[in-house]
Length: 219
Image (spheres, rainbow, N blue to C red):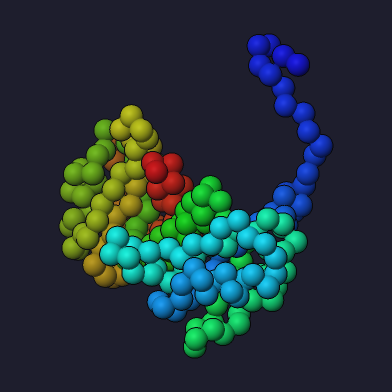
């Protein structure tokens, strides 16, 4: 039926687990460079009829060492995964699992990038990175760097802004050593800059999360 000009589509509800559990397309990786579609057909053919088999190749025709096997029946696909995942063929231990959809792969890659970025950021921050909040509206990167440069060598300096470029009231200054950061905190915390006293401290995990939120937001 139509509702406000839009056609409704009504079907029985299927839970996410049930949707994920039923699949026909199987992903197989870590196959040897010499493995062909015929080899995959021979191995996977024991579990049921297949609609397609493909070994992925580059522009030169060389195997990328992974491929896909699509079954007619979800039950056959599931049995092949259970039986073949982790088995060794031609000296290679195969990974066999449900082939993810593009949206699932993109989400997984995004989560991996976020995790990697967080690890790198936390390692790089150490005790050298200073968090400053309650920054006056007219303070930009250059002015923030000028304020903190007397305390040592600054490796990076950033006032966080929104999409319109408006100062969000906090930022970060990274020094070359922890001693320089400590001096900056000791001398600058509570100091009046413009009409506001600024708060200065070592960038802790909460502030790290702020940076990651900013990164994701701008992405």
